[in-house]
Image 1 (cartoon, rainbow, N blue to C red):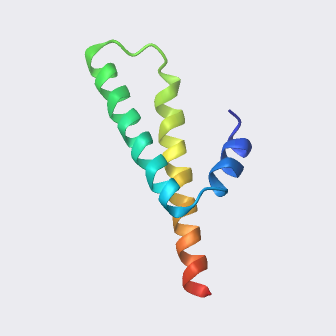
Image 2: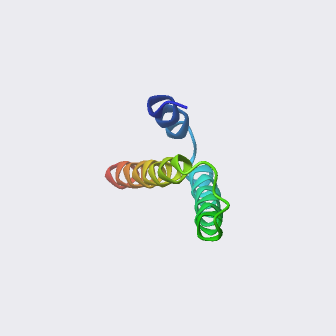
Length: 71
């Protein structure tokens, strides 16, 4: 998925849905690290994608928090 598509999809989510998405991404990141440590990781690029998706979710959470604080 392209990052611009991913960004727009995530922006439409509510804060609770963003928290759920972040939790899922953190679990996936843990599993990928575990696979890498045991030598079973096939798609090494996925680690980078997940890390960036986590950053996207956190950025959107912060933006929504600041926007609600301003209003």
